[in-house]
Image (cartoon, rainbow, N blue to C red; front, side, top):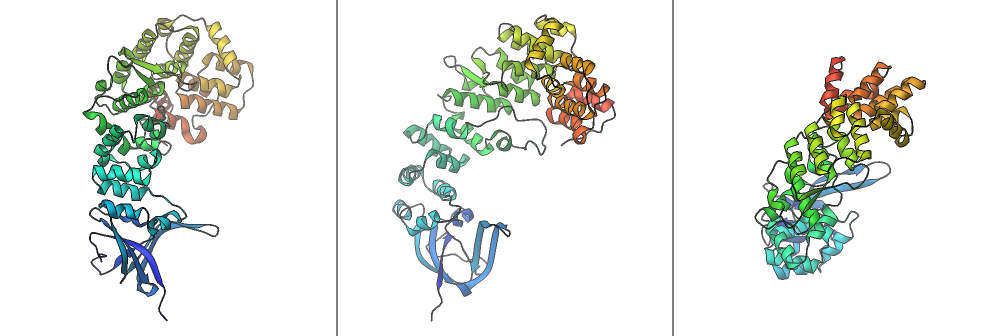
Amino acid sequence: MSENLIVAYHLSHSEVPAADSQGLFKALTAEFVFNHWQPGQVYLHQVSYPQGAIVDYREDGHHDGISSFSWDEFVMVDNLTSRQFWQLDNRESLFSLLESEFMTDLGSSIFCSRDTLHRTILTLADIELAVDYIRRAQLDVQELQNCLTEEHTQLLKELLKSGLFSEEDFCRVRLAGINWKKLTTEKDSFSGVTLESQLGLSDTFEALLRNIYLDSPPPKTEKLRAVMVSLSLIKGLPWLHYITAAERVILPCGIVLMLLRQKQSTSIEAIFQHPDIELEYGNAENSCDSLIDRLAVYQHFDLLKSLHNKLGGFDKQQSIRCASSLSATGSSKFQVATFNIVEDQEVLKRQLQSSDSSLEDAAGCGYLLLCKKLLDSETISQAELDSALLSAAEQGYCEIVKLLHKHGGSLEAGGRWPIRYANKFGYQQLKTYLLEQGQEDLRF
């Protein structure tokens, strides 16, 4: 009785399967075969082999008493037979693949993803064939964006020209979740080391965008223009060519906060001074008040003055926020008066209205006057002092940290987090104070 044959797939450079230097063939399921594609492999074979032909089995996966699944697996066999093959850079053969048993096998896998297949085809095919493949395979915007790399610059230009892809698609799918506040100068475990991990945007995709618009007119879409300007500012690259006199650029407020942490004050000044750039204050976290607060915390008084001028002066709410933040960082009355004179009593009244009157909330908001009032009028536990000190340290309010420390708050709370926060977010004033108090220069 003949042995049952196992059906699998194999990639090669020719119309026949290719053995390695040891005479073995790599065979995979449809789900994993394109994980192993190498340049020049333009033939996909459907192959069969007997169980006894398996020489080696390799797997990358997870297995325990409850679940078992693989991210990748393949076998090395000493003989196999090609049942049929498809030439991936040939139109007729490629389109027949889309109607073949391979696609059925791929779709039946537990963790089905066609991204590696599509990425391989778009890399192998010329632009005309790649465009036709996108139409024939009916790739949606998300699938297409998952496949595109810097190598596909000319293809993407053609897709934009043909209407198969649009700038709005960029904004809706890949650029929707960028967190412009998140990047810090520290490469720690709390905030990864790449734009992809910190912003939700990969370096590869950014390079693709830059290649598209490097020698072309600026993006037509307002949001995409803002993204290109922002990314250029972050990396210190030329950005003025993305702005035209006829089209304003609205940048997210968070980009200024990011540049602050990167110590790029020149770029921030350029944003404040440029007549065709506006700042968008979308919510409480990305508000004008938040920007005023951060400029004060980082002691950028010239930039604070530039923002003051860009806005045509601070209103009462902004003046009170400015006064609160400057006092929380130990700035002088003269510096407060530069922007607007607000009496302490009025500042305290607004702080009482804006806070839940807990010490931790007051400290985290930078309300020095309210912190003093609470400490003078209430009995505060050690746990409350430590929690409040951590909140103040995370936001860089050095004077509040000093105040709470004076009243018994621990500079080692949370595992010495105050000095770690100072390093993570670049709070130099706070770091200097903590080192003077004998703290070790620690990072997360």
